[in-house]
Amino acid sequence: MTQASVVAHIESLDHEGRGIARVDGKAIFIDGALPYETVTYQSYRVKKSYENADVVDVLKESFLRTDPSCPHFGVCGGCSMQHVEFSAQVAIKQRVLEDDLQHIGRVKAEVVMPPIAGAAWGYRHRARLSARYVAKKDGVLVGFHEKRSSFIADMSECHILPSHISALIVPLRELIARLSIYNRMPQVEIAVGAELDVLVFRNMDDITEADFALLQAFSDRHSTPQRTVQIWLQPKGPETCYPIYPLDAPKLTYRLRDFDVEMPYYPTEFTQVNPEINNVMVSRALRLLDPQAGERIADMFCGIGNFTLPIARSGAIVHGMEGSEALVKRAVENATHNGLQHKVSYEMANLFEVTEASFAALGKFDKMLVDPPRDGAMQLLKAITEDTAPQRIVYVSCNPATLARDAGVLVNTKGYTLKTAGIINMFPHTGHVESVAWFEKTGPCKTNAEVEAMEAAEEAVREAARAASMAARQEREALAAAEKALEVAEKVAAKEARRAAYLASVADKPAP
Image 1 (cartoon, one colour):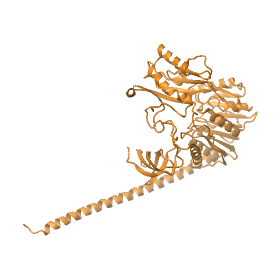
Image 2: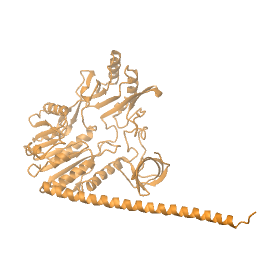
Image 3: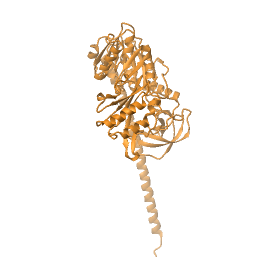
Image 4: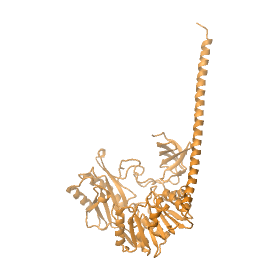
């Protein structure tokens, strides 16, 4: 439902970079609006308690506003904050982390670390571009989806991709349009390594010899003596991808310079999209963890060993756990590749189903690094007991809300202190917030009975708040109903008065 444009004053930004205004007591989340601006907006989603909207006009501009560099910004859904000055983006993300820690976890860091922020452009070394033949354009589009749409943006460049990859967007459109399966190739996954660029074409049908020749020519044309463009095909799921040309290309790798670690990986395996910031993030996390020779350290949600192997360089004994068999296999191979196989061990496990007993069975860890997906690590952290608690936990997060929730578990029930926390601007020009936090064991764990009593008390408070809110709502509705009834009664009375007056006037007239 689209509403007519309305004027609003923007008070703040939410975690997705949308301006927040309040109109008649209702929260309005406005794409493209910034704090301190006065704008007109048009709603595209209307709910009882909030609305989502787009800016129509900026009547008074914020000092935070800047001109977007990309000509596709506002249509393409790949970025949401190019209109925000870069240093302001970082400050906004830091505020999101601090607010979530306070309001969700009810915790506060003793020290807030300076943000980690690298290059603003050309940072994205991993990307999945959609491809689609569009009959109306008589051609193929390759790019990110449009904002809030399943359509693919009509892109000719992308400023967050490395420039040499951005330059391939138009040639990729032309290449796919010439293939026999031009309408059966829905995506191209891109992985930029140290010496190699991999393009993984999702082919839903087999390619022909003529298609292979076109792909081969594309690789030859865009490779250089310094960097090879290698073509892969993916006929089904990510595990089915394989290289087709050239077969003698260098391995796809990234490096962790501070730890002399080289990480080979497959193009469809998870790695951080921003290798420069990843280097700095790993270094900061390990300074906080402070691994020492001889310590036994856990790396939970270890992936292919992004933190495991740097920790092992310290001389510590590291046990990595991960839920994906393919990633565990790659982690084992990477440990051997770096000569660290005697310092690390790996285990496949579902870390969302950890119990106190299964965690205790792993043995005592001196320290633990946790790097979970967006869902966080609540079940793992709840499994910690006084007997199994590591002295130090460093938590690397891609979702400040679940970090804050899990911080509440560690601080409020497990006897940890949040020593420090800060953000990592892994994804400039988006609302994505990466962060790292250090927890130190400073007190006893609460017993299960104490935790249950605390949770019951919190639920009672929430229930009382819900009841009060419901009562207030019912009171407002009753008041509104009474006002409506009074309004209706007044209209009826007025109508009756007019009718009585008319009848009286008719009665007073003499008969003809």
